[in-house]
Image 1 (cartoon, rainbow, N blue to C red):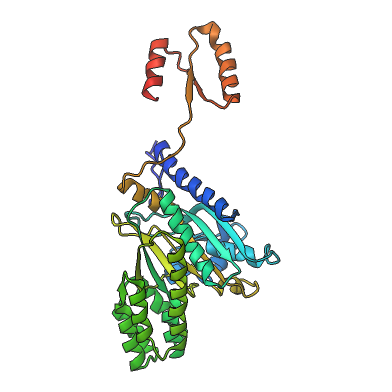
Image 2 (image 1 turned 60 degrees about the vertical axis):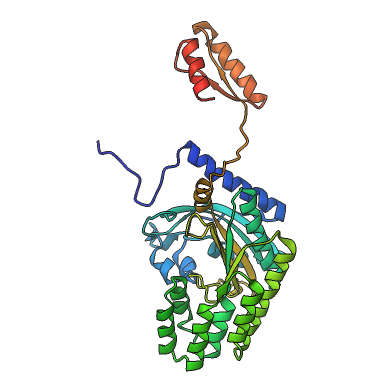
Length: 387
């Protein structure tokens, strides 16, 4: 018989690892209830066209896509937002706004496996649908901050940008079709290539100069950075409005959160095509990958046949948060239940041992019955080893 192994990019989780994953999920779910987010469950398999519509070229190329037995092209979900947008555009289209929806589960992308990146991974998703107000964006950031705090993470920082700044500049220059290509290059920090695409798409010299300035503006003093960005984008009306929107959101979070550590990056972009407003990613110093990612997407639900509906959300990377907790030696605070072992001392007492085990479980205790026919001393030794 061959020695079977997991498929590349997939993992087995042993009890200790599973406990950590479930702990993050549990805290995420408790937080959803505290903020009023109702949990939904969407299919792992969706229509390829749905998932490909606005996910971005990079994700489209990495989807697990195939034809089912009916000849339909389908794919394993690479993220949750498209599924939630479909749900809102169809079965929930008449629900009152705002809608607060939560979902958690496994996702699939054919990425090159590396530290913190696997082909099957877990996320907890929060979507606030129906409000275009800055307080909705602030809630999603505050919720993410709350989750990381409750899980015991330290020294994390939010990288924050606003897609409206970049899109506002490009749109005023008449660059629409190539916007997403430019954003994907910026997501990979390939600034010179992004400028080349903008130039080839007809950007003016003023536009290129403005973009170059914007790419270089970053810093921790939000007020100072936003002033610099605003000065740099003068003449681009929508970009100026985006800076003001970002200022409002940050002011709201500052008023309601204990000193949020931020890094404002004016040239920050995320690879998904549907973002239209604020975007953010939290990081810890120990690992260089984002623990989660979110932002505003005001056009997606309409794309899927719904009414024009503003929305903002965040995907919490459960696996990556677990990695960060391990790096910072944060204990997984799962409530330790009292555990009992019941040992039959001889053949005649087995039936009584089963009855007693059943009664104790009914009373809410975690019970294991000795089933290896070991001596009492060996069974007690094993129970002590396993606490």
